[in-house]
Length: 211
Picture 1 (spheres, rainbow, N blue to C red):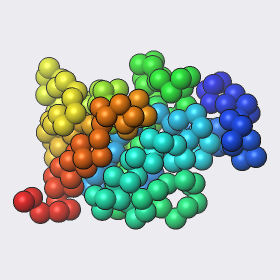
Picture 2 (cartoon, rainbow, N blue to C red):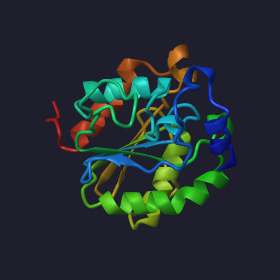
Picture 3 (tube, one colour):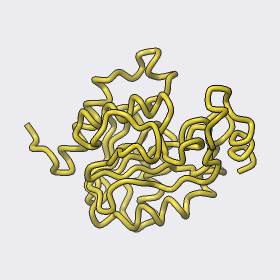
Picture 4 (cartoon, rainbow, N blue to C red):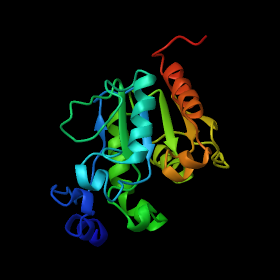
């Protein structure tokens, strides 16, 4: 909490003239989503600045371009909370609701935010048919959440991997490497790889016929 507020005061020079949100960030998107996208935490100068997860940062540039290609977002970019962007039968949330130091959330922060994640997922669970976990941290947080809201998560808990899949009740959970600059700049995650994961989620949700 202290870090997110500090960042909102000690702004990045390129955003010095902009107001920062600097508060916890809830999920957003369709109220009755078929697809859920789970991330780690708001970026210090992205979501923590704009008030919307994956908005105004490089990871979001990659993610929203892919969501748009998959038909899950109405625009290929997400720059501000009031930019007119909409998610199509999709909702997005983060395991941790506040920007952590170094953009690296801890298990303690995850556990502190778990009740809010549980409440958000429980509210949309009757509609969900697919979920995409962006990174190992989000994978573990999401599977834990699905178990706490009443679904039967396989034991031992499935390991994360890009393209890993596990059926949890009516929800197919698919793993993807996180669209961080560390992964996209090095080629660990390519556009084609992210597209494949989102296409799998779209098909599992019944939004597109399986070929």
